[in-house]
Amino acid sequence: QVQLVESGGGLVRAGGSLTLSCAASGNIFEIKAISVNAMAWYRQAPGKQRELVASITRPGSTDYADSVKGRFTISRDNAKNTIYLQMTSLKPEDTAVYYCNVPALRYSGQGTQVAVSS
Image (cartoon, rainbow, N blue to C red; front, side, top):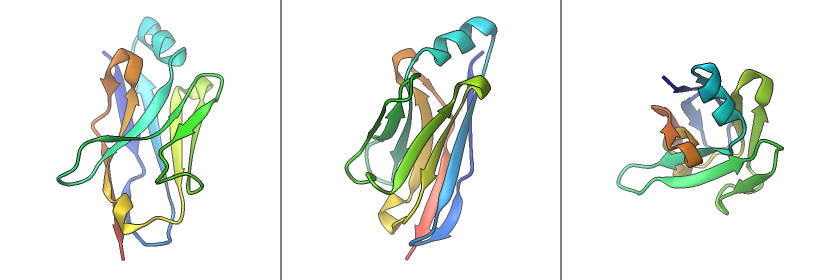
């Protein structure tokens, strides 16, 4: 069974930084399927819809929501089946539960909470 396990969330003051990690696990076929697909970070703030934050393809092409461009960096370690989200210059509006996803396969993690105080 595929598992996407996020870590690295927490409470930080505005202007601070956090790095989220997401490790994928499963059988050899599931891991192979994940490895050839794009992975992404989504977030959901209280009372709001889930939104795409950043995505990365296997070769490393990236895409970002306008609200995080220049502040967040997504990266991927294919050997470790892990993606990362480096978040800098955090703002209170970045407060949300952050989810790791493999959109094409509809895999999602349980989420990690990020809270940014003003």
